[in-house]
Amino acid sequence: MPNTIKFFFSFIFLYGIFLSSSATDLKGDSLYATGQYFEASIEYERMIFNAESQTELYKHKYKKALCYKQLRNFNRALDELQPMYFPNAYDSLYQHVCYEQSLCFYLNGEPAKALWKIDEYFHRSTDTATYRLFIPVKLLCLNETLQWNEAKECFIGFIQMQNFTPEKQAEMYQIVYSLYKKRNLPHIRSTKKAENWSRFIPGSGQIYAGKTGEGIVNFLINASVLAFSAHQAYNGFYITGYLAGLGFFNKTYHGGIKRSGILVTQRNKELIVNFNSEINATIRSNFELN
Amino acid sequence: MQSLLVAIKASSFGIIFFSISLTGFTQSINLSSDLLLADSVSKQQVHHHEKRVYIFKNQRKTLKNSNPVSLIYGGSLYVYQNFVSQHFSADCLYDPSCSEFSKLAVKEYGLFKGALLSFDRLNRCNRIAATDLDPGMINKKTHRFRDSIKRYK
Image (tube, rainbow over all chains, first blue to last red; front, top):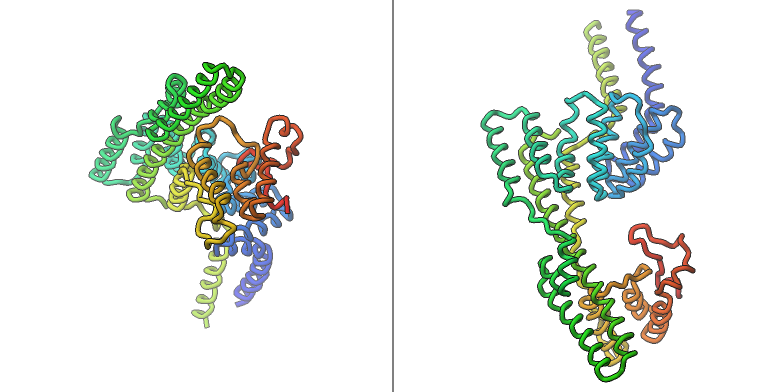
């Protein structure tokens, strides 16, 4: 009986201390849980300011970065995550931070940096059980950087990490081989080629990029400006022909070259996004993710 | 009595474990929702050329927006923004661009003051004027100088 009373006293004492220390954490977390990410980020900022140890500081910074991720401000999320340094690669927070960094880099349109971060984690941490978490992001980044063979191998490795039945595994292999067949891969066009086409025949770069109408309009604009210039020079109005005609032609000619490059880049991006969307849906529907 | 004490002990242990679980990373990694986020964000990154609308679209017809000068101005601005500007190599220094600025200025201040502001803006959109601009005004997203029409009230 005295032992029981002792136990209750120590429980009340410890629980009181625990509650007072974690109350501040809970406020930020509850704001985050209710979807008030901006308010939660402010609360975490206050906690960062009051943090007494580096572990606490990093934990709050990580949570603040998550708020920014939800607010789709990936640059600011990266600003929070980047300065953290973990001497111990087996720190559980290190894995979380690396994962979020790689994801934010990918979402921020910097897949090469995301790959670099993932490679850094794989290099530093030998705990292969945690690699599984990084593979989907790595896969999307490899596709984005057009490393098809590496992406295919990565996908196969991801399948092998799952506890699939042999039938399911065979089915998944089939899906991967089909996705990465040469004819099913996005048909990526060369920006340089488009620009060179436009340099040679104005408007042809746009046609190469798949915008026939725009290419024809560009050709007509260039041709008419050039014809105007020639007509003025033929009639003896050399200054008008040179300044108005060729000056304007300079703008439309170089504008056409630049535009064809932009169109190809946009088209390539669209193709890769569609391909990645397919991969993303395959992973979400077939894999146990949590 | 003894059984009651055991029950209380067990429940207090339960409370302790529950509380400890709250202190961990409550925002643990959810790969599925992250993949959904990645999908929606990358779809947004794909640039779709949006047609810029006619300045007086969805406005009730009045003398102010249906006189010949307004119609010619609005029509030529629409053609320029949607079909011509993309063929030029010139890049505007400012955000919003000169044509968009002109459109907004005419909408906000009327044709006369809007036209004067547009002329002023066009005169300031060149390399010489760029040397005199405040670098603190650069919009980090568009890498252009912020020059909103609200500054000219």
